[in-house]
Image (cartoon, helix red, strand yellow):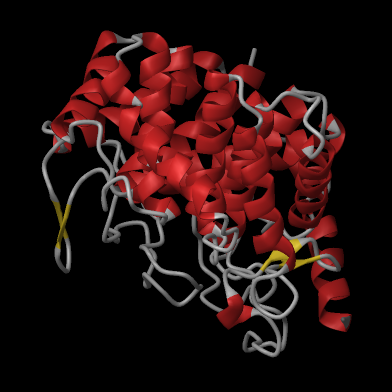
Length: 376
């Protein structure tokens, strides 16, 4: 507990006067950065249906690519371009609007692509775009099980799909099932659920809840894992009717997480891969940072988070990512590769290439889109 208090004290001191000296860049500058980083990726992957080959070959409708398209669709809302829309539609068509694992899959990673499929359906209502994702989610509901989201990444991959389907079909069964699954992950997985109500942060899965500890004796809270939860809560609350009986709980969890996160921001504006052990793979890392920036910016814009507290923090975070991670050609450095804890995907450096480049960019585009909406 003493080290937690010390970390919080140092963070508060470090985010003091220096944070207020920074300003958000202009809309023009933010958009230039988003276009640069996105064009790097689109140029590198001109065929969105092409398989992804790392340690093995995978189809390009897996979660890593789906997160990129979440970012692209967000970018398209502030910078509408036919090439963005066409690139997303081509992705869906190349996969016949299907899911990795087929409609029988209950894995949230395989459902993530459905977020973009549904968004594209709302632009052009062709039934094939949502047929498979609806069938798969309906199968999840019919199963009667609530324990499929056994790792916190799944909250981001799956929850927004349920929200979108509930709105699309005006059917609260999707909202109700979404909450049941969220609550099970929060309160029941592992020993007592994956959410620590004392620290207001999440253990990635049951392997990391107590007695597991980081080298400094603190609990293991993986940055990107907690980033996924922040992202999920934003994307759900953006579309979920406020009349939903569980909206207030989502909102409180979001506010509590943000309050915990702002206290442990690095002096340079980023967050470390291990949120409570800054010396355990404690270098720069932007995927968690991008997710937190996205959440802070959305919360400030909506009047949910205190502007005086959170705008300086998100400003430092955005400026640090642009300064330290964005290459001249649009490549993003300091992206931790896939995994589930701080040691995975290391080393993370300015020039290191993660095993998948897509999800880091997706998080960055989401963050930048929200920052853009705050700028003058």
